Length: 119
Image (cartoon, rainbow, N blue to C red; front, top):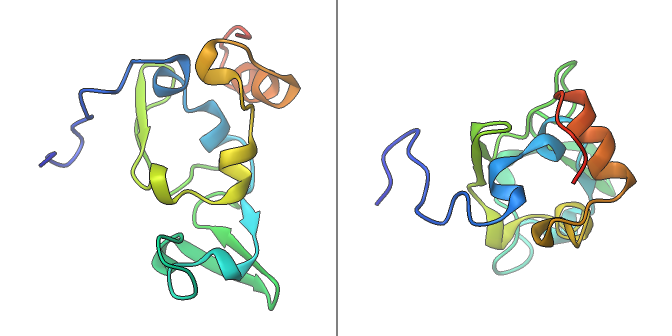
């Protein structure tokens, strides 16, 4: 079991596990049907905030300096999503080739916000 602040051995295996810029750059909104209270294996309810009857948001992503509550580690060094297998659809769909070192416009914008070069 990992201790607080400790990253898993898999951290660093691909560009995304060293980056985390997307988790600290954008709002993450999705339908409440994806919550654990409504779907087995869904996003933990306690990590979200209601926005409307048809929309919830990952905590921390609506702050002036966004940072998803599920992100652990230091951006640009080593990060991991603490709910990776349960992450919401916007996270699953974002920059699908980034783990292969191929970014897209959103990935590039997020990395630029942190002074990182594009993939």
